[in-house]
Length: 503
Image 1 (tube, rainbow, N blue to C red):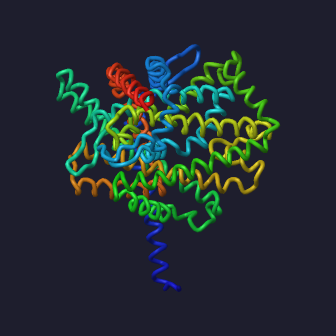
Image 2: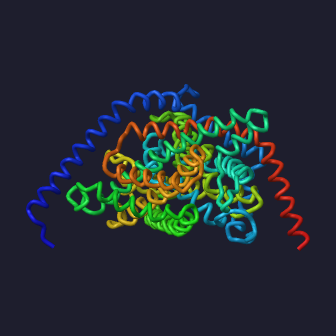
Image 3: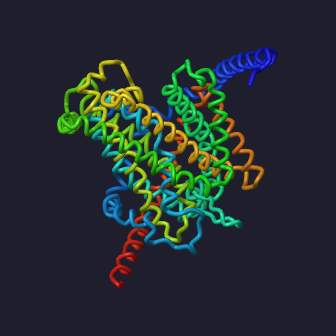
């Protein structure tokens, strides 16, 4: 097909106008939102001196909560793991229970919201900053975070609302509202729920949308020829295609999102795990030394990165940012599960931090320490996903391609999950109607395209801070509800034991 000269000139003019508009928009947003984002970030990620090292208070807040819930619930992350697998397998399925999706679809959707670029590139950054020992503390924080997930996802199902059409609304905004209503403060509960919902909407448009589409675009052009490829100067086109694809999926609601997530998550997870294991097999001679280095460096008193405390802080921070245990967002997806036993879904949610952090992040750590260190890649100046990609490429020249595919799928699935989180927050604020749903989905897909075109750093920083800010009221709520969850867990497990004994 040939184009006329006027058409080509018009297209060129349009592209130049778009570039000018993007730059202008970026500057305008930075001017107005930048100072607010910087102020909020300085508050949310405020650092204190912790054993001679600086640590963000929000990270300590989440890790302490995870440790408390693990001990308080008698290491439920170990005791309930086997039963969680049987639930996901479908052994306790109740087709007559309220809900919209299966246990497997619920955990797949929640995992899709946490497994992202950070599992590949963020781990490399953590090890670069905190040394190999950071991998140990990352693993431990992931293990502890499993208990926090159980508490918030149990509450998500317990206090969810079943709408007239059979759809489900649940999450922290509902159980926080219920908490204060039970203490005779219904208006304050509604206000707190609205604050959580608003923060969720802002967060979903930033780190759950624009950042993901931007990273997907970067991964795509990296394996298709860089800036010289067809899409090198056409981020808007990539974003348009991605936005339309996202729109096709989310128009069907949680059933459609869960259906797609239940296909993508196992595929992308297996793809990355198999690829990482293949690289580790090729670095087998260095693997024992890598494990020994991780363990020794985790408790080292002397290190350029702050020794044991420095490694601990960096590892905990990466784990918290990865699995989001304590933020409460995943409970929104788990709330849609088809069950009349809230604890059953709480147990299923144990698998989420396990897969996200204990498995995928730990494999990324081992690839870096067992391959990048011996190959001298740590001295090349590479960081993040580029370092992980170089470690894969060290053994297999074409390895960056499946890695890039996994990265794109990670970003795509994260956008899907956060579209549902944001939608539920939006409907909590404005009321559930078809017009409200359609308006949000159109705006959300528009931000997908925008994210592939420009970064809007101020928006990303602001949304990032808002998402972690809501962990403060969420964790407080979890502490208050802890006795209720402990009682429910005990009753549920006793019920399962009796049924097994009788059978």
